[in-house]
Image 1: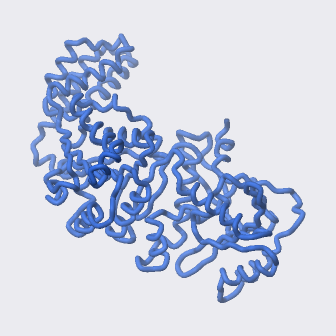
Image 2: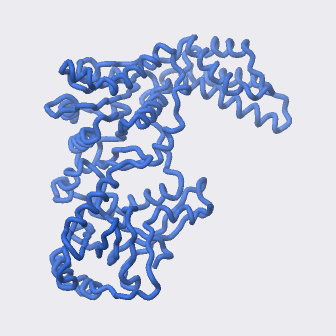
Length: 508
């Protein structure tokens, strides 16, 4: 299937006849309204629509989640393609997932459409107009009958927009986004790739899944059904891969995973925290992941965070997992007080037994390649000579050695896998043994967060561009106490992801 054919699935399917039987009666009134020096857009459009469609019920909404052009359960046809007002946009595609560098689409600034949903027919208008320092989008739904069918359709559209479809809720810059890329990334994670001692791994799994399965037990003994867990220890020892695996399993079991990148936003840390926990309560039972707790929580926002964590608002069914490379930097209110984070797991540099377990993992991965040569004697040697190596360092030993060996052999050199491993261990040991004064920068650097790759495929690129386009709707420079800010806070931080309606270029 070609890239353009696959990309077409990302858009609303719009069909129309070459010569529409009926023109758009609102095109001229909208043109006149847009030409005025002073506008009362919603009032003027409502009045004009009632004049043009006497006897029709009218429902108006500015809710970004109720954009029917993004609702796949409808059939849509423009009233008059020639009367549509659109803006052309370029959508770049990822090189590794597309045969073409990008495609063109059009955002609808003004449009009238016929919409069919279930057994009902509607007239739908969507307009984008300037107000203040930004733009707003307004939708109007007309029906030849009562308002109830329109309300039912909008309810279905809202429910669909709030559901996850192979996506993960990710909070960043003050908004919740549905991230397909992160969902794809965590699908690669399995417990087999989490190299920990069996007792440790089973304890983690029991704490996580036992919490979700024990609702009745908590209720029976009148215990608050909530929990906090901290994974801590030096970077590169499995915290992130454990988090990815837990998120994947939670999603498969029906418990919503939610990932927080940062509390920094246009509405301040406290506004972001309220949005995060508000959304978590809405999606309970759920898993909330806070990576790098020591960076997320500081002196200015700690009190509010603790209030959200165990204050008067109930957090029934919410499991919070926090990670940190610097447990000593956490406030005692987080690190030691029970009822907040009551379980702590130390992901320390692996001991000899854990290193041998990790070497076995690589022996199994490379067992199919008999030319490499990975005898037990080499496995024991690696485990013995890698003291103080983190799992990340151990991984680098095998990845770099494997690449070096294969490249050298392709160049005609007779290089053994064992010699490459020994050389790589020696190189990494020198880095590890550098004086601390040379490693101050590295030691102070925050731990790498879970990798979130860009969404692959045309649909992901399309969604990413739309998010950028929609940010023209009064996000830049928005005042925290503006009506827009209050509206968004009312939606628990959800980003207005339906603000610009887009359709394929070849439809008009």
